[in-house]
Image (cartoon, rainbow, N blue to C red; front, side, top):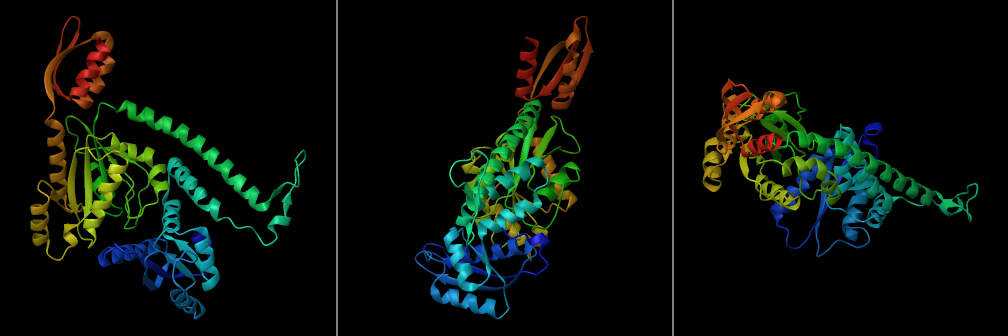
Length: 421
């Protein structure tokens, strides 16, 4: 992997893409344009694009001979020193393309992994990203020209020892095992935290990367979550209380964004993070309606949610960034007709945020059950949960304890009755 952050030489990249049968021109163009945005997120200057229609990738070097010659001329003329491929390609294809063109080659997966590596902040996110990067790198390690002669002997070892390549691969396996153990411990902590709020009303923000989820999270909760106009600015799940607080109190989660051709390893790696979405009672699916590709982006998010088992969870569509479109009224009319019940908003407009807040409060209030319960004096530790998760209508002191008349979710009623049985 290239260490972009420590390099002194600016990177000028050419985007290389093969359009396969069954892929429309619009879909192809959107994918390549997105690769350009990914490159710019890394600080890479995109100076050109080389494309080709083929029945399948060239098995040796992804592109055909003519296009490889075109790339070589661009590198030799000094226009570019990096080639970014809009697919995941094999290690041998990448090596052959590098040899023929004289430039470093990164496929789409490597670019996304580099962005994830740069933006990961928590211990869990850093460990998850490192595991996927190491698994990606392992088959791409190259034997040095004299690698077979460079044996690493050891005291008590058998035979000639390990080659440098074998040693590097073993180090990767050991590091993956170490990180996996660390993640298991962190997952246990997260499961404990989720168990504490298992009876709470919970909603989760989901959607394509850079759709505005974190901006909306900040507006709805008043929290200082990280916001940036970058792809994959948020990799860590953040859980905050909706503000102003409602009854029941609503917990809102911000989750990692999705993207077309997101490496399967990353989806699997962030499964524990995405569990916040799985355990929510409502998903707020945020769509950037100002992006020309918002419809395929909406489809990608639907597919990923189905893949992680969240396809059946109730969902509210929020078409965000309407303030950035040329004709907001026309867009709002079109979207409302095609997606009844959706909200067309800008996360930067207080009145729109208030509409989302009110809709959330209404959703969770509709299933509240009203009733009475007596909490004995020796079980008053339950008071905090009652006030946090329910709406207390009346409280009266009796000889045996405090009697509450409240409106609360069915889960809280069940939890209280179980604790008092």
